[in-house]
Image (tube, rainbow, N blue to C red; front, side, top):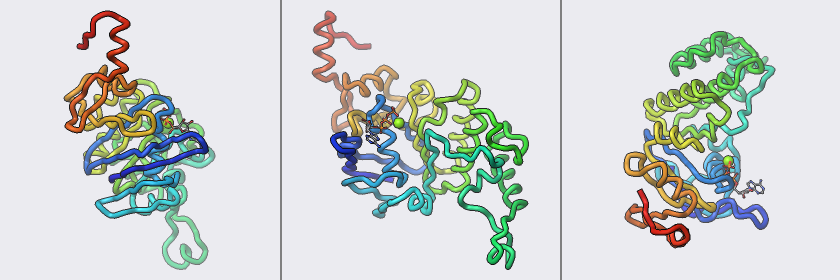
Length: 272
Ligand SMILES: Nc1ncnc2c1ncn2[C@@H]1O[C@H](COP(=O)(O)OP(=O)(O)OP(=O)(O)O)[C@@H](O)[C@H]1O
Ligand SMILES: [Mg+2]
């Protein structure tokens, strides 16, 4: 997927400021940036949750127009939002098929619209198994009774079931402990290994360096840089986020005036 010149304004606030974006087949692309940089707005534009005021989005080179998340989902683009959008009063299997229920075959399904609970349970169990999600033992357990990490696993599994082209995750580990976060990272790797690209918004720099193939740095509403974790340090990425470092057209990083002025105030300019 590729986007060019995306713009989104909310009154006087410019959430996306002529931003570009691209993600390639089979990669995990981390999107990092300060609070309010416009990361969530960007991925909402890519997932149909908001309609940009300007700019173009293409998928496999073809222009797409999303007017709702539904439009994106039809094309196999699934999003796990920061707020998980699960139904706590329903069980795991039903949550996995939320909005896309399997119906019983024949007259029962098409006329009486009876749900095929058995098929959904079997498919749900198979899917969790395929993703190596061992933390969920009973597919019939109510989501409301699950732990935070388990809920996250359900949300990710649901995206993985229907996301055939692209899976977008907005801070999927923000509320999780170390072990649960590791499980989500493992899930992300498994999805990538299936050949499906993943966009991961995260504030957790070690995590980003562990799982990302490339890092998109967002600053002041636009893409400020794209780097590979092998080529840069975490300090570099933080400096790109704050504007102390910038990236030239050849991908090289250089100190900005902001950084130089800061150094002048603090003695000689040295950078590790
Ligand atoms: N619905 C809205 N109405 C008005 N302003 C908004 C709306 N959504 C986002 N904004 C503004 O757009 C800017 C970008 O917000 P966004 O949520 O995309 O940032 P973010 O990078 O995801 O931040 P965070 O890391 O805190 O999640 C912010 O200044 C925010 O206040
Ligand atoms: Mg956000």
